[in-house]
Image 1 (cartoon, rainbow, N blue to C red):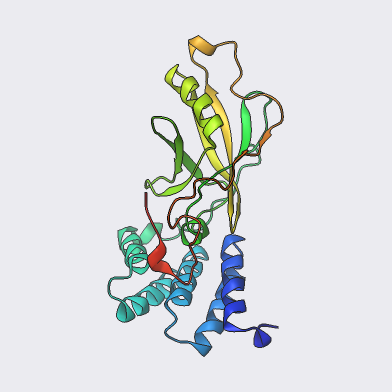
Image 2 (tube, rainbow, N blue to C red; image 1 turned 180 degrees about the vertical axis):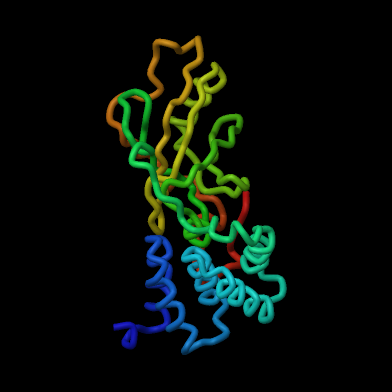
Length: 239
């Protein structure tokens, strides 16, 4: 079936495979793209990342090295090369996806909530995320950003929920957050209250259903955060 796909369709299929974390499919599709266009930097980067996710570290490294020969300033390839070099030889399988505990997304009324982020990052950044991956709150004056362990911006909580959680956090509440679902234009996170401050000892963090749909999902988009495409690595932004 790949034989009949256009370059644009193949690129879309590669993006979809990455977002679905179907790494074998991502490898197959990107190799097909490279058969027709050996210098396609987007496909090389995607293939390199998919190879890393399947534990094929050296092959992935070769793809990123090819990118740097074509574009010595390519940030995506450069960052992945640095990541590979930083890994000890006896720990080279740590980049593989870790199994998700069935207890991770266990819902507790009043203590857990599934939330769709707003103002999400580029597709390139989203494709590097994994379901079950821990993410973190970056508190601002009137809002809460969601970032990965390296501080890379992923998205933000809706304004009304941010306001509520900022109040709770300032009073001593603590929360954990993990990626629940990833799609091309959507990131859902699972938030869990892990400690309740004295001020709100008898007040739940969340009420109603365990799923939260933001009332203004598409307002106030930030430049570059919704436009990202894996074939445009230079549009990747870190906030």
